[in-house]
Image (cartoon, each protein chain N blue to C red):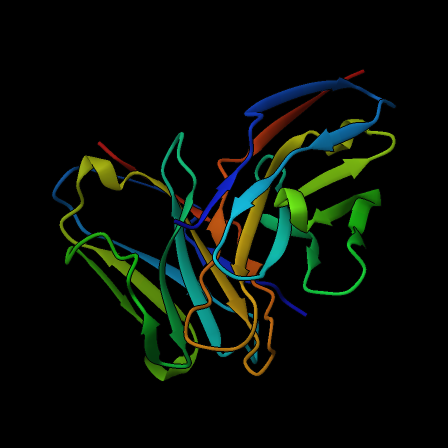
Length: 116
Length: 115
């Protein structure tokens, strides 16, 4: 069955510290992969996406993610966290290519708190 | 360019009442999606429109939910009658047609509370 696992429900880091949010997926074919962020009171904003090519993907707000096929992972990283990064982060996967099936499958989300 | 908008942002209704949620996609986006997040659970797909046609409604929970997209522009999601388990955040997303790997852009969501 297709699924996305975000093992960490809640993470707290200090401002300036590095961050890694984990995402593992189970998918029958090569997926395309996304990270979205939801800040308090806001909608879901796309941070970055992976379709093909370079497995290290750069996104907005200084985030990057690395696709590791052998580990079925797509972990999100940031070298130095800012207080404004406190939000909920969602990993999602979808089918690669055109077709009728376009729905995204989501992880539970990871809530990030940042200590000053 | 305006993003995806949703109305209302919050709705509190009593069990058995009817509620209609509205989504305005990004102009020019033929694909429109509805998702729902129940508290403590993952975001789940409800359905997908291409223009005014329902492409995939496999995620609709039951026949109390009715989605429409007349004219291929905005969409409404009606819940009638609402039950307690319908509470959650309803997200709408849109994407352009024709891309092999489309990116979905999301609205702020409508938080529905059924009492």
